[in-house]
Image 1 (cartoon, one colour):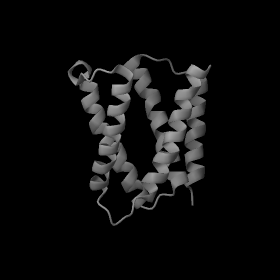
Image 2 (cartoon, rainbow, N blue to C red):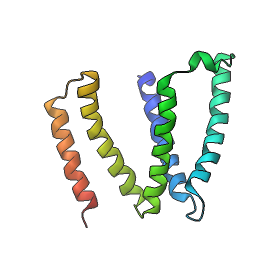
Image 3 (spheres, rainbow, N blue to C red):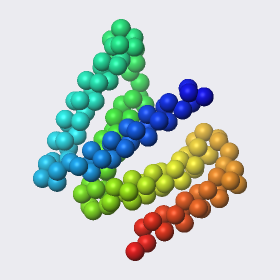
Length: 139
């Protein structure tokens, strides 16, 4: 049970800090300059974690195309959130809207790219989420 739970808790806690910190970035700073500092800090943390887990720093053994594309995706994600909050989205609405839309898109990614089955319950859940998006964002 704990093996299934701790990664979810890590994601939830990290996402809370992520959104609070992203919303707190001063508007008079350059978004990409801020991301450079963020990635330097992240790279140092990742290096320490990598070194402490393996004791062998062999980047070539771990080099693969998804990791490179993930780098582009992360920059887009981070910049998107910085500009989302700078555009005036509330922290409670912006992140929720983005994550619900993402979940709906990933239903189709799972279906078409990975052959996952979509159940009636998932379809109903997606419809409820879309209704929730309307209710959350309607003025």
